[in-house]
Image 1 (cartoon, rainbow, N blue to C red):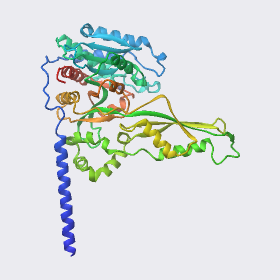
Image 2 (cartoon, rainbow, N blue to C red):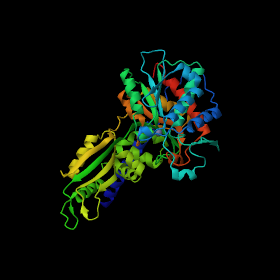
Image 3 (spheres, rainbow, N blue to C red):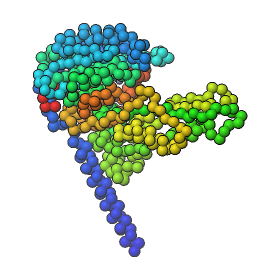
Image 4 (cartoon, rainbow, N blue to C red):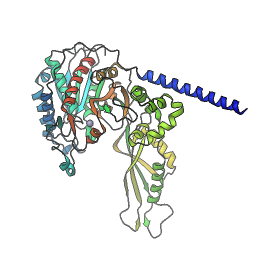
Length: 496
Ligand SMILES: [Zn+2]
């Protein structure tokens, strides 16, 4: 009898092991089907990137301090004008072939008419503005943040990674296409907002203008993902992360109004204690984590994943719980799979012996695609279940998570396909961007919205964005130029 049970258990374990292996095999096999690998390139005069000249052009753009401010009145308009003049000077052929419009305060829209006006245009975007360099960190910079110094094989300064490199490489690419007498089949638009870093309205006004003209885009690309070098947990080597969505944003004022009183005779409940109880509930009851959000990404990265990850993602039915725990252990990964909650402001009281009649907090939420602002508010109302606690979105500081762009569109497949030309062997995968970008505005006129910059990024590089010693390799910048040269040619074909 005992022997029979042992045999039965062994048999069940063997069947289970076989099933896990089979599922892993199917997973790896599926992952190796690269998006766009069947797409032919276009016939195109190859570009000869003068990498030193291109680097100098980027350096010149870095030297102009196009810092954006929450209050647009603080922006130095002259600096944006200087940048516009610089573009005119460095890209004369482009400025002859394309129409340029200044939209709103300082945003730019370039139009390169295609041969066939009946085709939907494509749009390539970047933002002109940068964040300032913190006064206290200036001494830590190897070269001043707005020097645009070219040294040690890098271009140094604010905007090299975020994201003048994209803006200038797009200009370089189009300039070369025009020089090489390339004629786009469909209209190519370049859209450069001027206030992305302060969540401004530059890109929004470009979209509004296009909308007014009845434009619908076949595809658009902006900053967002890039080629991650050892950054994605469980993935070896280079992997292209193409942003297909971004999280929503909600800053909610949570407040309580109650009778003020003397602190020597506190009532059971008063404004501060009611607020504290409410915040406690909010902080201790995070929104549910959804592993399903990263499944499409790991499905595509399967080939480059470590064997353990391959087994785990191939068998979510068994290892879903462990994966969830692993992802929740890292702040970045956790933010990818849930709507996050962060109490960012606390206010209440003016004197140590007075119970304030009003107490308030601001809670910042970053919403997963599929979880609306209404859903978050309703969940909180149910969770707190106290009518004395009121909610109010901070004015202007809220938008829904974006839709999720498809990975089956020609636009996406071309991005993946050109990426493979420059980074052979690197799998491309869709991912959800945690921060915000101008791209979210474009869903109003486009379903195929992507976020990608064709440079490789290590964890070290990541810390330089908005940080100290932001820099980009001269060679990597030359690749960006060539990348967009090829991508624009592909995207502007009739069949796209
Ligand atoms: Zn940016």
